[in-house]
Image 1 (cartoon, rainbow, N blue to C red):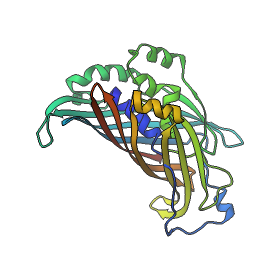
Image 2: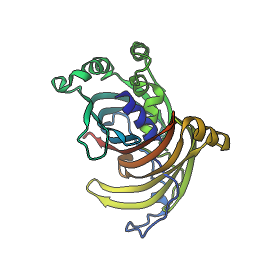
Image 3: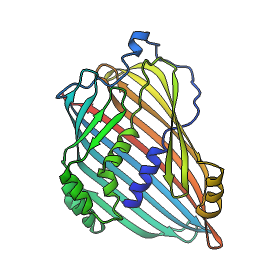
Image 4: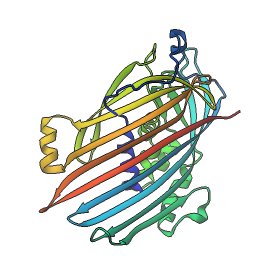
Length: 325
């Protein structure tokens, strides 16, 4: 699970995209006043249910020998808005209430073979009896971290200003093994990355067709990468939940500089290709991102003795958010 979550962190953070071409839009262009309302509009005592779903497939080959791992991760969360200041900055009490994880892997010597099982892990915090033997230790480590409130401070543009971890949570995280990526999942940085991967920092004012970029540095197994995220506000359309604002997001990923690129090729491996695309929708009336869906695929090569390890990882990440009535 830890390798899978580590891959998810990299792929979710690298899941936003690079150049965009607008196709014919069927959404009507709102007025300038309407565009200014494309922002978070949380209110004190609002409550939300969130679900984060990811499916992932990783294929690694050395000569003709192949290792394949498939996983499905579901994380359930709740939000309670404890305070909103006059500028619209909200303090959100967030809790992770459930985790359901299934990981299956196999190896085979040649393509076409059935393959030998490598691992079978299942963890379901809501139905512990479904947890596999290999997942019982992980379940035991996860359970104390569920339903623990964590305060998140967010501006109305969607920028995460602060994540506050209580002393009790910090102590629980410190008790986990050093290799355990649950530390990252429940840490301030981990929660900030998870939320940022399924949302957008919105410029103000915002108009239909507007495109903006955000750059950052991402550490990967191949070294530091420069990540450029490109967002476009496509327009508004009607949905079952009312009018929604629709966004497209693309990401580019490349070695940080020429020195990094040379080192990545000779020492750590190299990035062969990266592609990704995603769409996000904001409920305009209630002012929150109701749905986001992102796909990405990354292929790499890494030298190993006199061989080359080739790896391709594909992810589909989806976040759904509903307001309680």
